[in-house]
Image 1: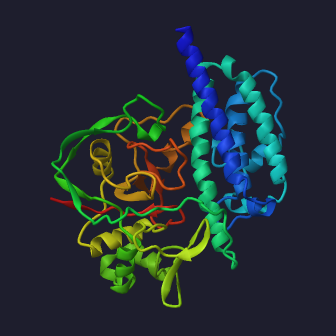
Image 2 (image 1 turned 90 degrees about the vertical axis):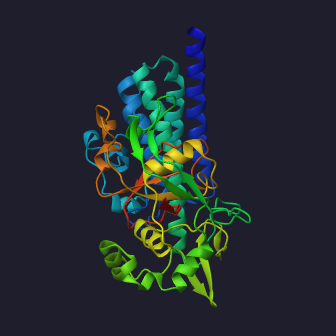
Image 3 (image 1 turned 180 degrees about the vertical axis):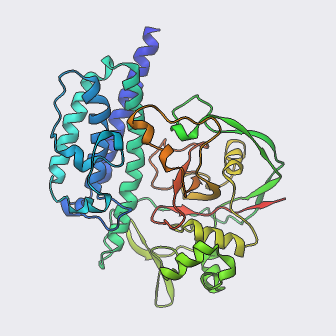
Length: 397
């Protein structure tokens, strides 16, 4: 028993250390100015991501569970709380870009302060606090992805189209992969986390659902296929669109995926390596649910249901299920049967957002290593598209 405890403590220590180091590495190419700006209310400054994830450990682990812990700066809780009502008042989300102070260097000093304190206390924490450390690491991994996608959006607003870094993540193509269909016979299947490894509360409880015979596309929809949709009037044909989607498309004058631009007759797109030509064989990215649904209807198909995608991911080898783009499903983000949010402030993590959003499955090129699984439930509003979001088609058979 003692050896298993030591092993578990060592695994958690490694997870915490590697997670915190990975955030610093993702922020390393950024100047203080890069890390302070906010390009839209949905995005946050990189500096804020680094601070908020530090606030999480300080607020939920160190302060209540480590006697004598000294809060780095009592005024910063107001700045870096995100949406936890139980943790007190907070700065409005759309004003995070006004935080020129504290500086990036001060935020990094805070991270060092918290990391040192938690590393010293880790072995003596009660199991409930250790579970919060584990949750905090997976929470920080989510923010590592947001840090990159928010920087991409910020840099896309700069006329110079600066690069975050050469060799930065991008959705890669599957060489010479023709689109085909992978069938599933349907039947009763179990979905949701099976309880063997970490899961967010919204992935539980595991439960059975009935599937009718269907097929999933063998790969993601490509940029070339999306360009054909554009050329065929896909953005000009209201019968392809949901009513809310057409209203959004019209209001915002949407005519192509986010970041696409015609230059000398060819499409270019903004990437983390700067503006580049659109690669025809790469999966289309940065499209919202409304666009994905319209494309599927144009293609004579539909979007997968969450349960269909998960059942196939657990039992069938398909290209690009993970690591290219998050994949829209037609499933609303809602509670599983028997779902109960955690007690206390961390219970606000997922459950209160189960309204008006759609589930995405898989992971993207910006998702940190080890942060993907078949049961994972990402979720966004149908108009949002600054994430690496793409499309896998489905059909009834």
